Image (cartoon, rainbow, N blue to C red; front, side):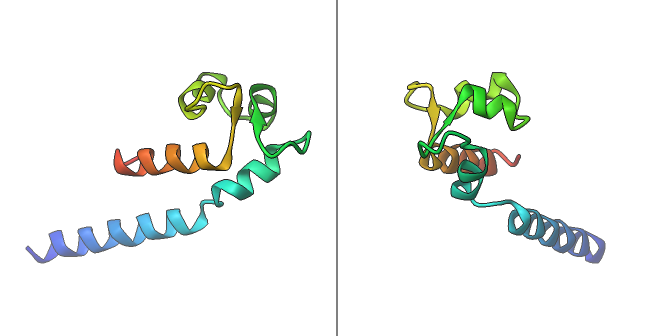
Length: 83
């Protein structure tokens, strides 16, 4: 039982470190938003090195732009799925 507890503790610590190192959605949007309109277009998304096929999954309202709120929601959903 003790090795299981140790493994669980290590896994939780690693997850906390990974989340702490992940930039805030608003910071990502600012970094990737090259035209300064406060959102990220698909062209800006791919220019930032993000996979084009993931853009549609994050663009919740399908307006062709990803906002910080949409990014936060997508990241929260990914955390819930364990990824």
